[in-house]
Amino acid sequence: MKRIDVKDWFEFLIADLFEADNTGNVLARDIEDGSGVIPFVTASSVNNGVCAHINPQNYKVMPGNCILVGGKTFTLTYQKEKFISNDSHNFVLIAKDKNVKKNQYLFLISVIRTAFEQRYTWNDAVTKKKILEEKIKLPVDFEKNPDWKYMDDYISDVQRKTREKLKLLNLIETRQNRKDISAWKRFHLYDLFDIDMGTKLDKVKMKDANPKIDFVGRANTNNGVTTRIDLIENVEPYKAGYMTLALGGEYLGSCFIQKNAFYTSQNVIVLIPKFEMTRNVKLFIATCIFKESRLHYKAFINELNRHVKKDFTFPLPAKQTNIPDFDYMDKYINNLCLQEKKKYDLI
Image (cartoon, rainbow, N blue to C red; front, side, top):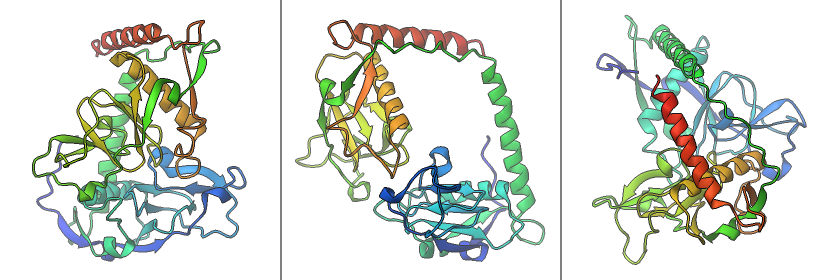
């Protein structure tokens, strides 16, 4: 989408637009998925934050048609139905205008996220008091009220264009033949890597006057690199080519090859290969690790922290000697890249 011209937008105090309420607090050990029908929603954008459906008895049920804000992560999701959330640091924003519906909420989420995502971090958590004191710019009608129709029309247009693009992508044969992995072997992380628990740095405490080092956080874009920071005296950065793995949070299991020297945030570990591995091999393994993580572990409920050095295993193609078949992995990724390039050259 092209950049929106906001010069005629007006500024509004968030407290004038929304009511806010903190969610309840639910311990992960008490969650039994399938015990009820009420969504259990965490501060995650994966699956719109829904990670289970539980019995609402004894828990604070939040209303639907609102924005859930992750106090610690500043994740914003639109919740259509009633739900229960996991952390009392989370809160909901409910529009005072009861005619506001999904599309307008989605527009508001984009505005709020864009305005404040660099301000609020894990170490400077947002609260309902803080957010209500903030101001945002919105399109206005002739009476200088929020132009709800414009917001609805804008999101509808985005959705229409997105559907058109998806139709084009669907014209490309993207479905690969399902791989038969019955002969693959399961390997522990420590079979293949030295597992380093990372530098565990807080981004807000870092300096960036002369940024030279990548800072890898629990993110799923840009190889997990959230910013670049200054070299820290007496703290040796990790080498380019090592891999990182997010142990928890909404992007649990995100595994990347780092192309530059780097430091890590909390709950991001470093995987140092014990064997010579090409980039293709690392990409293959990173994908298998991510798939295993998303299949068998859950953010905020059963994360990787307790498992990576003990019982976290994942399948890989192997030779008869039970050694990973690195040659197969390398050729598979190389062929896959060539095939995908040919497909997208046709668009």
